[in-house]
Length: 249
Image (tube, rainbow, N blue to C red):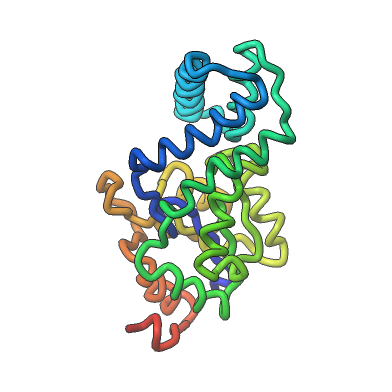
């Protein structure tokens, strides 16, 4: 019997819409204005910063591919580049600046399909959690708050806080520790990545459903869903559970 459901965030509950040029410019300007005021950084030096920052993000992605499952938050990356360029970062100030920087992205994070209705419904019957690889906490917290479903989740495990990324076993051990009142077989994990979500969840004794996002490569992995509302079919089988009329229609 399923008593708790954990969801991945990006490409499972929410889509990330592409950044348009206006959004990119606003994000860059947020950082540049702070750098210029704090360090009297010139436009030329800021261009150098952008190159170094991009290179660092590429390194982070490469480390992830090589199974170094440690998170580098946005502020940590900025601090590293500033030090490399000979500037001394103020980490406390950077947190506020990075928050403003990522605020420009919040409108780009939109719920997929019936996410809001299904999460609202499920929270009346199951314990819910969100477990995500994410470089900044508000990129999860603020969209959920905006859409009125943050209260539906007992807790969020974000790599930006834990500093460990899925599929690190530490992430799934944290989940089981948070839900120690449940046996692993009573927990369902739903995500769009076999490597980061499905296989490690199953390795820790949980049930798992693969969310086949339209933009992901097509793979044969069962059980799977293409719409969040399809989980009701699995829950009906495992729990004899029925959703309310709103989510059945």
